[in-house]
Image (tube, rainbow, N blue to C red):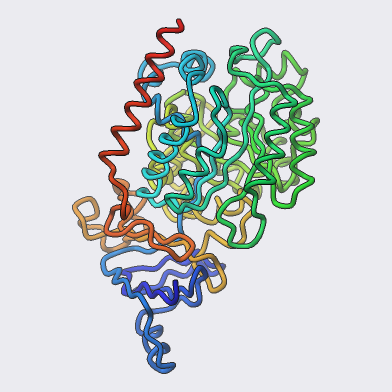
Length: 468
């Protein structure tokens, strides 16, 4: 890949310890690693002094350049069922029960095409690192199917081998037919770790283990998954937790404790664990999350559309909890716009509800961008992404701020990325490779992809209707 210079950015946002923002900024990339950030003039002067001409120069005039955005929680397969249940106004448990019969028809081809489409949409929103939670493995579907899509698109990927084993006949929420045998789950979890997990610095693929939720897996599977993960460096643990008041009630009725206490009783706490949602922790639970180093992925749009509540992100940040952002499943959002999710996080934290005072200063635009970069890197246990600094992975994105949506925002173009309508990435570099150029993904025919995706979605609905 050689030497790449991205220069003349209106502002380059480093997210380094000093939170420097460099006007007329530039970043020099050698192969897959950032070599230097500075003003364009200083970097050009240094290169000329050394008699070096980069193999590639990218003019980022009228752009804000950021570290690549990090999406910490997703269900890519759900692009196939967008708006199926959200439009009707269903809350989480009813939403799940509506969709389980359709998702039961998933196969490997559907997992692949949905991942390809969802990841393309995420790339165009500025995401460079994506964690996904696939927990249905019907009809021969495997985690391998979405890994293939991620590798083809060049995204830095954290797929998690999800699972459901506690069906309705055993007191769980999902139908028995979408659940797996626990021995099979653990065997396949060990397989994907052996086949795909790369714990090395700058890794493009790290595996996590992710039993789905307290109401869809057994305590034994939670314990065994944690033990398996911890036998392998860098394999992390992930699950949904404290998403709704219904979940709180389920845990109290079935386990005699709240969701976090239940997870802790099974060994699910520590710096190798991150929870999706965490909408309903109390003050003591927030303190325990901070003390253990467990991370939280905030999914504001999903929490709003399913009426799950407002996660106390400000309180978690103030307590020292690591918080990142996720778009969540594309059937509980119904989009894959990570920059837009940063905006939603900022807006939702400012809104009041009973017991949650309205405060316009609760989360600033820059804090929202930090959640989407450094925050996400921390939640995923990565110290090699999240900022533009020498030695970090060469992941960066550029958004144009000379367009219609940003007209008049020249006084603070960085904040405008969050306060104004979400932009599409103009440039994205991952691992030193250009994966989005001039707002498009080179070599990807979106029309063909959308047609294949929609055909797969129609097939799922048809199969589910025939079975019912």
